[in-house]
Image 1: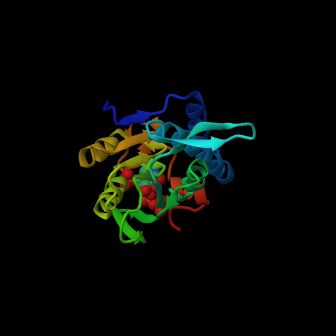
Image 2: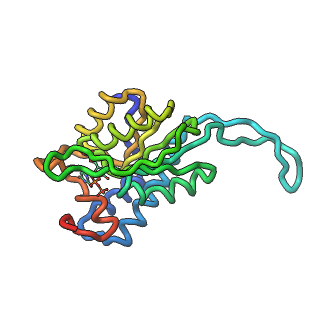
Image 3: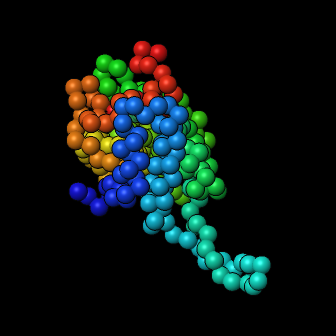
Length: 212
Ligand code: PRP
Ligand code: URA
């Protein structure tokens, strides 16, 4: 697998993604686990980000420390990506949050863009896309194309569960983007759902049913 694809091998991530995808996990616990997993995945995804050295003062003396160098923008893909944004913003409090809305057409399974309020120019050095599911890869692919047109130069994608087909499509379209996920699953089914997967992430996060 490409060195741009990072599937977490951390025991805590493996434990929590198992609980997340378990059928009996209720909405409240699902949200909590998405938050916890996001914090852990952001930690892993930020491992290669440069820092600036700075001089600062502890209660006892002046010393040198570090601060994140890039300005970071977080882009949750509405709806399910919203469940990841608080945890990511807690880890990177200086980050800005921009929203993109996409849903998959139920018949064609292709992404439909319905919300984009990005400002005129991209103010960030690093843009982190948040969406728990990478299935066909169409939503992430199109969202990242929008972000590149906007001027984003350095983009990372953080998801929770990916299908091999989605990883392949995202890498084909955007080979420069690092992909961080908690788990790489077996395949997509005929409805383009990830198997074994966790079902519909948005529905499980918000307690809705597919017909709503
Ligand atoms: C889910 C998920 C991704 C997309 C992934 O959203 O949150 O955005 O599907 O599928 P893809 O890789 O095949 O494009 P969904 O379309 O269900 O919308 P929702 O978050 O509003 O429920
Ligand atoms: N979107 C989801 O929420 N789950 C899938 O398995 C595929 C797309």
